[in-house]
Every structure is written in structure tokens, then in C-alpha cells.
Length: 249
Ligand code: PEP
Image (tube, rainbow, N blue to C red; front, side, top):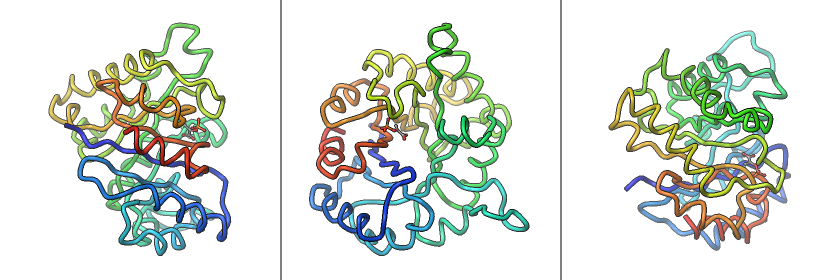
């Protein structure tokens, strides 16, 4: 049995007062579980606040990105060590919004993955195709290219203890969720790609689905054999919906 994860991605949202209210409400509905992890990935400036609110609770926390650099003259960057020092467990890398709006290439994302690992964080490595790519029938080759940027240089062993998130770009923030069959097909493809190098790592790896997950569709998605939970954007900002998704995992 793989661990199930429900991870909130707050994106560019939050305020000191709002974060406290949201996390109090989420905590009321999330209890410690052996086989399930709940986490929130928050903007960098809130990591310290969220850490002090969540330390000792059933909810872990993380960042939404991490620099590929360790230190030095990289104005505006935040290193994995800085994030880890604030008690964070996770770091999202390669979210499609970073790839499409901030020029992150497959190789930059792979470097960020390595930097997060080196800092002792659990990277959540995001992959996914655009609508044009799905319609052109190239979903699998896009996923293969994104995965291979990691697998070819770092090998499948680098994924031990990490997390992959399949996030079809056309489903992120659009209200258009992938069907459970579409999600399962992509997840099975990703797992098989990794299994070709290391079946053990592939079998243990949690692969999350992300893209308009809500309380109302989570159970059907999470029932798929290769779907091990969700990376949740918009719905992670509403405590009731986020708790419902957690319960579905
Ligand atoms: C995300 O930001 O990773 C995401 C999946 O967003 P949403 O749930 O809002 O589609």
C-alpha cells in the first residue's frame, strides 16, 4: 500500500490573518493517519507563520518552488536549505504555471528537484500536457520527455521517497477535471516509465492527480489504482472542500 497524500497549493494567495483562520478550520477536520499525509504548500513569506501554526499537528507544510542554486548572487531566489530550516517537508517543483509563465525548462525543473532533495525536502515533481498536446495525441510523449529529464540524468533512484504529480494543464484552475480513466491512464504511463528503470521505486512512488480536484470528484479519482491522492489548488483555500478531499483519500 502506498501512502496517500492530499497537498494544497495556495499559489499567490494568503494573508497572516487569513492563513490562521484557514488553517484552524482545516485542522479541525484533519487528524493524524498512518497511511495518509495532508500538507499545504504556501508562499515563501508565510512558511515561518505556517510552521509555527502547524508544528505538532497532523498537517505538514512546504513551498511551491525552490531555487536550483544553493547560495550566492541570485537575487530573489530562495534555497531549499532556507525552506527546510523553517521545518518544511515538501517543495513543489515544475508546476505548469512556473514552466509556462517563468520559463522553467525540463532541465531547470530537474535541477530544482535535485536541489530540493539535497536540502532534505520531499520534492513534488509536476508533469502534464497542454490541451493542444492532448488534442494532438502527444500526451504520452510529453510526459515521457518531462520524466526523462529527471530519469536520464538522476536515475529512478532519485525518485525514492519523492512524489510525482500528474497535472494536465487544461485541467488546472479551469473547473475541467480529467476523467478518472484519463488520470489513471496517465498515471499508469508515468509509473511504467519509471518501472522500466526500477520497478521497486515505481511501485512505492506516490503519484498525485492535480487539476480542478474538489470534494465532489475526489473519491472517484482517488479510487483509481495508480492515483495516490491529489495536488489541490483552488479547493485548498476553502476549508470544507479541502477537508472533504482529505477524507476521500
Ligand atoms: C494546482 O495549482 O496545482 C491545481 C491543480 O490547481 P486547481 O486545483 O485549482 O486546478
